[in-house]
Length: 391
Image 1 (tube, rainbow, N blue to C red):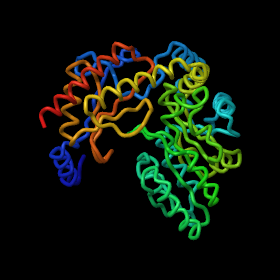
Image 2 (tube, helix red, strand yellow):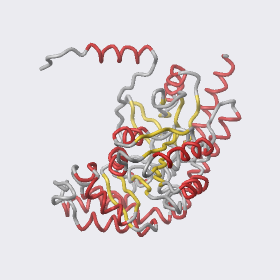
Image 3 (cartoon, rainbow, N blue to C red):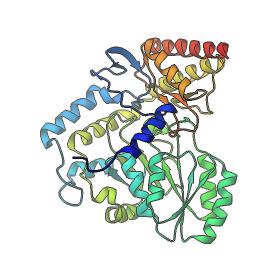
């Protein structure tokens, strides 16, 4: 029963509609396919998934998830500090730490949950945070939820960051620099060597979100963050290249013990279920040996990037599997998405306030075929050329 008025929310919905910024859910049928989905009764190729290595439907991953479910149950039934820590949780954390070369690892329910609760646990009233302006919403949520003071530095601008660091170290007990290794919307990388040098020079701490790099970049797919000597904490996900769900932090044993006692997103939530643990364990069997798939992934992205630029399109700097095609306005991005859908290509438009400039965010998977990628290249290039001719 509703005892109040929803008028204020209705006004915002109407405003978003006028600006072509209203978000709506888009139910799809997966049907167990590696790249194809059914949307509005139409079969199409999915080019906006984060399943970068195609592991979400890999038989080895599915089999272990099923085996662990039947052997251990559908859910863990408790938080980690009650009865929700099993031998499988500990073994997976130890395996992740060993694979990445870190001292310890700690599992979380999701990357958003981790960022939103790790940062408040690490940062107190006497501390400061300097965060990249393009950082993910979950990071900003964590910064705002903390008791620390935070400022945003211009995207990947080390001169601006250094100016802020100089002021911060004179003001706060501890300063944390927080950024992503591979940015989810622009597909560009952080200048990690410069970041480490700055943090070392001024004695500040470095927190890296490695969600879109783990499994895809670095030696054996360990990620850019895992290989960054000098980082204090690296957060990565099991829900993208690993094909499953959940997240983990790479950190020292001291920080691990501290967070087990202080991080609300770890303490007060039900632990990951056996199926998810099994899927992650199986993914770790496969990821180190998937160099061929990683090469294929970047080859597809490079071909697409070059074709879009040749057709006159605009793409932010980057060399990753994430290729945003910038559009002039929200309406244009929506039109492009709809036109591609008519050609059997599922590419969602990303609009403000998620990003500053509307775009099609194209993501590639090693599961895509050359024919599927060629089709996307042809239709996207055609869209851009037709748009340019209309101007």
